[in-house]
Image (cartoon, rainbow, N blue to C red):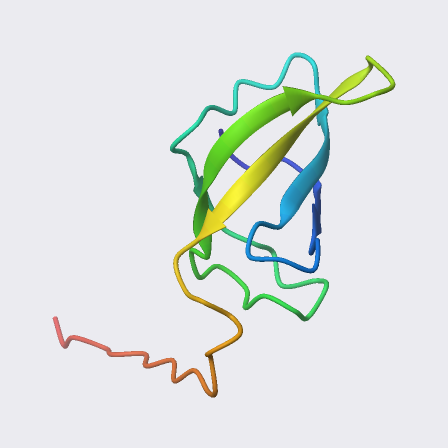
Amino acid sequence: QKNTDNIFIGTGDEKPVIKLLSLESTAKKGYTVIPSGLGRTYPKRIPVGVIDEITADRDGLHKNASIRLFADLNRLEEVSCLSISVPS
């Protein structure tokens, strides 16, 4: 699913949650999660995990998706991002 605005929330354990997915959302288990970087917790446009499970929200108006992170954030000390330009 491309360019959807959702709330990515830490839960205090290794599985953060995407809250308030619309009921019409086509997000599925296994989809890659790429944050916008607006919350400053997760880097912009760097894949952080995959959807592990989608469940109905208690309000019955939305869905929630639990995320399996690619990295164990409790062991993460630093991240290096490299940008490489290839001459044409």
